[in-house]
Length: 294
View 1 (cartoon, rainbow, N blue to C red):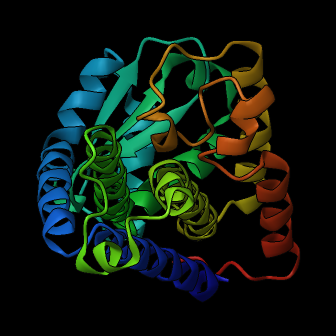
View 2: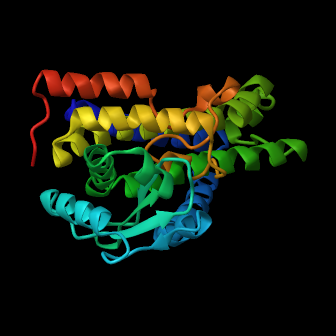
View 3: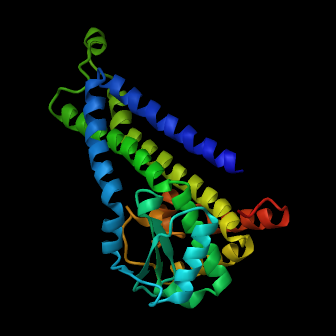
């Protein structure tokens, strides 16, 4: 299962790259694609480099020490040691909704943040399962993978925007092939401008969901508590539905369960797999002995 999730990630990355190359070709060359990729890469590199600080400030997270919360600090330190990771910084978010996330550009600059609500909602074993999941994201370098995916998807969206403006001013799709054929096909251009960014977003979400499944599996191995993690996910899902957090779509994928409402069309753009499927897989890991602790 681990290998399958890794394969899916690289498959979707390849698909995004091919989509980017295709759009560059449709625009009549590689110059536009190269410029868009550089710009999108610069923006996402900045986001990757400073993402830890940005997201922690966004949610008013406060760094806590062992003296502030000995049990939580000890849990993070013990599980980080089992996973072979440096001790991350620990943050508390003043939010009654139970949730948690990990951030940081690499294991040496990682942070684990939990809401005050999660400390009240989960028992110590369930909290261990959650912390194990977050440390799995750090161990799997999911922040880096997410940044690479965002870079390519951002480049695709940027090129599509350039194409839209070019079409408005009559300069769209003037490649040599198009001149010979009497101009670009409007249906092709509309597909490029409208469908390509949607396809890139869907692929980006698929990568996010695949990494969540992998983090559940690796997190269960780190904590040795797949069933406790399954119970925690169920509790967190219920808590999130009762009282969604005030957050940003751009950071929703960081949390262990989506903090945003998921009704209506929002369900089509889920950053996470369904909790029911995650719980089912965790029970399967436990009953079939598929989780091997570190």
